[in-house]
Amino acid sequence: MSDQLKITLIADMIASRKMKERGQTQVLLQSILDSINAKYKDDIETDFTITLGDEFQGMVTSVEKAFLFVDLITLQLQLMTKRDIGEEIHLRWGIGIGKLATPVQENGYSIGMDGPAFWHAREAVESVRRHNDYGRLNEKILTGTEDEHFYNSIIRIQNVIRNEWTTTQKETAYSILKAFHYSDWTNQEVKDVLNTDLNQHFSDQTISKRIISTNIKQYTSSRQWLAKHIEEWRMAHDN
Image 1 (cartoon, rainbow, N blue to C red):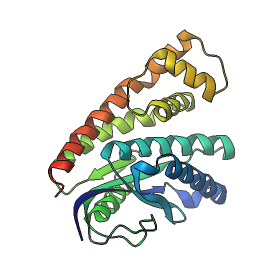
Image 2 (tube, one colour; image 1 turned 135 degrees about the vertical axis):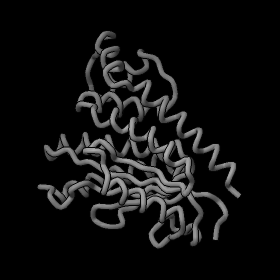
Image 3 (cartoon, helix red, strand yellow; image 1 turned 180 degrees about the vertical axis):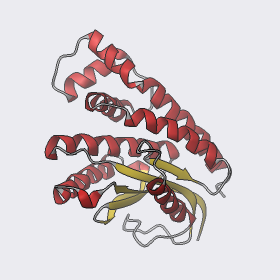
Image 4 (cartoon, helix red, strand yellow; image 1 turned 90 degrees about the vertical axis):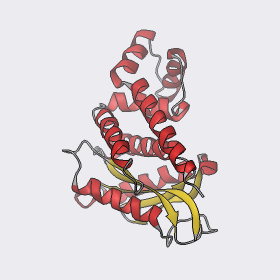
């Protein structure tokens, strides 16, 4: 149906059936997805949509945006559930790159769509479910090529960094990613963002400590360069 290589994301909530406040968590997740769909509509080919109570999917325009949405949705859900229900909820993600066997739906949703892009994403999320590296792996990408082993070796290290963040470090990382994505920034710019987002007045020393402790510069640079490498492969094979 399509010779283009599309980028699909499928995610689900980990241990959702054991949640104390499952209904409230689903409401929070829906509000996050609605916000992402509205703010980044030019970067989303089909909206992030809840397909089951604990699972959602969407299709995006670039690998970098796929990584960014994984980061933003993951961190925001963790922070909101920790704040509102006292229980930090985690997601597992599958990113699939491949062709479609069905057309992109005009209604902006991916429910009912099929093809290798979705098969790879589904296989990836199921792989994370089976092998989560002692809870430190939340994300995998499948492309149907040998290079995916290289991609996932880097993602595994990135996930270790992200999963070691404390709540304070997650607040810092989330604000930086939301404001600057994977682009460069200065300490003063981060200070301004955190002062606004957290309604506090941080010292230069505190900002510096937060940046260093999260390894956020290393994390975002790694995400950006891996996305660039995969995107170059995707465009070279997109015919």
